[in-house]
Amino acid sequence: MQEDTFRHKGMRQNLVQELKNKGITDSNVLDAIGAVPRHVFLDSSFVEFAYQDQAFPIGSGQTISQPLTVAMQSQLLNVSRGMKVLEIGTGSGYQSCILGHMGAKVFTIERQRNLYFKTKQLLAEFPYRINTFLGDGYKGLPTYGPFDRIIITAGAPEIPQDLVNQLKTGGIMVIPLNEQMLRITKQPDGTLKREEFGDCKFVPMLKNIGND
Ligand code: SAH
Image (cartoon, rainbow, N blue to C red):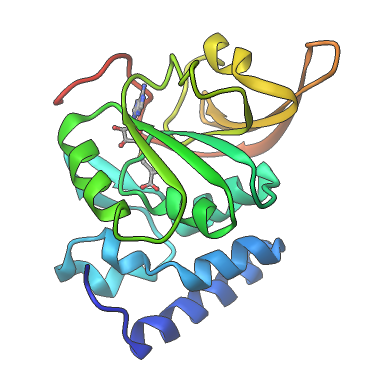
């Protein structure tokens, strides 16, 4: 893993301040952003970009989400320590580490084979409770559920029913649905409460495992 210097730590604190200015208030989320070295998820030649509030290409045609998006989704998820969280779209692994730092037991699925193996290796170097899976996020992980929280980090065209089934009662799903950030809460009677949180842009959520 690339080293984490005082300079990186300083840049991270500036990013935390920027996210506060942009409306992030959850101190657990801000602590995690301040702690997890985002530059190790980018190619070493892009260190300068790691602590700017922007999305960035990570190879295999995928992107690491913008820090504000990661912070927003993590805040909407309302995570407490020990919760079981399912993430769809491992990508770089950065969001998994943010949730891991917040004390979640993370189960993360990636469909893109090369990215899956690359990120699995990197995540193993962190002290967090993160389990990686190669699979189709639309199907979730029926044998590991139900989950307290589900976070989808690719743009979904529909609310995947299998994932709703794997969400606990009272559980929360944060999903970018048709470019709108949506928070869904599963009510005791099985119905879904929906709250919208504005426009967002993500790489598409695709079906099945692949190398594309
Ligand atoms: N959470 C990531 C952001 C990843 S971008 C991060 O912190 O870096 C979205 C990712 O979702 C891509 O890696 C893409 O390959 C993956 N993806 C798209 N459709 C998927 C599906 N059906 N199941 C699992 N992963 C999927």
